[in-house]
Image 1 (cartoon, rainbow, N blue to C red):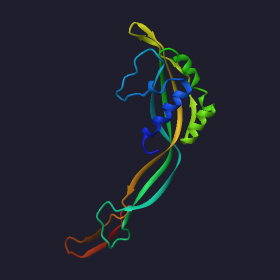
Image 2: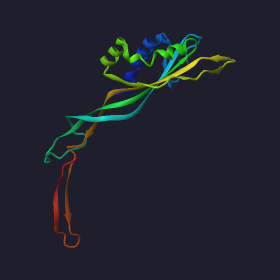
Image 3: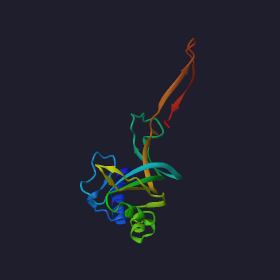
Image 4: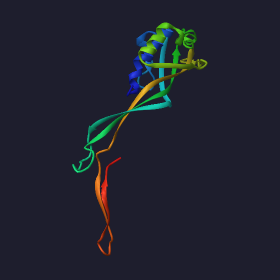
Length: 191
């Protein structure tokens, strides 16, 4: 995964399967959209990267030089580096309206369901744990709106790419200011 948004379809499918929320009533939080109207069961979710976990793997691929190069230097290409690491995420799921408490109860053991385990495995996602669900019911428009939240700790492989300027370099010469004698000269071959 290179972009966190690649995970959204997975979470939406998982939330719908676990809770019974209709697909058109599941939204990503903080996207500028309001919750669907009505009193039918609805859900919102928010994915937060927590930390990297374990040891990364690195893949180095020759790439065209980004900076102008001097052909007398050792290298004429840079490295495009792909760092593959495992990232821990927290997925917060909020359930609203009628049936929210029951839907929240369905989430904690979801990773034991074969359909959910298959979905996660197919998308190279793992499920560490689920926190205790919380009852966040509150007064909304003079009536009590049922709202429950459940946090899941998940992990996925993340690919980060960057360039190492291997071909960048320059020649240098150090001279004595008084005598103008060359003290040292050479070439620097980038990082």
